[in-house]
Length: 247
Image 1 (cartoon, helix red, strand yellow):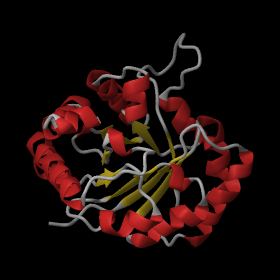
Image 2 (cartoon, helix red, strand yellow):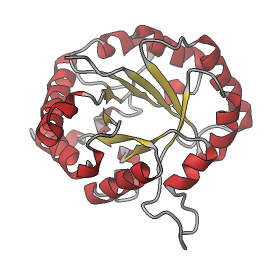
Image 3 (cartoon, rainbow, N blue to C red):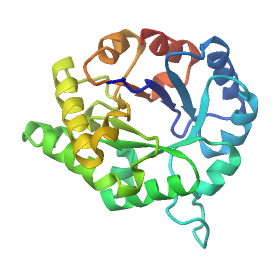
Image 4 (spheres, rainbow, N blue to C red):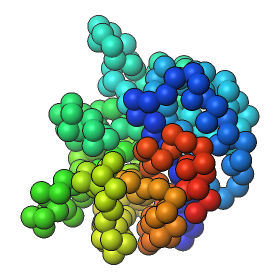
């Protein structure tokens, strides 16, 4: 069985103005084209400029969210088609900050995944449990339930990634043990196989949650970890490159 090509994706969240493009250029100048994929998902305001700045470089430009609908009276929202038009190639969907802060359900995430496919974008679908759910012994059931609920049947035959991000580890400096990460990623892989058969082996399963250069190697070499979704550490080229090189 061929392993999925690893993906290291940086999520800039609501950070970055034009000056930050220099960090993206620095990453692109030092990334080699083989063996893995590297992506940066800046705020929507920077997608077009970053796509132009990194044209021809081995770094994919992505987005952080999209609306289900293609167009309409949705003030302030952005459709998948608009993101693709601006130069995005992939899109993060169902991030825990969207699920918690905007009450996004699995059904809504699945709708957005369908929209991303409609526009030709590759989805990175996020799942993860809260600390309360983990302490209650519900982590595996919660996360595998999110996988089933957030991935529409239409994904079969299309490229996508899953990102496991324990909510309690995001931005806190806390990380699960290697054993806990491997247990969850193995359960996610089994769920993907159940949903998509042999094609369930093709999607990389990323880990996200306080990934930094100091812990990247241990995390990235754990079983069924196919890359990382990196938050704050992706904002500075040196930190992001440290994680990339750990793979």
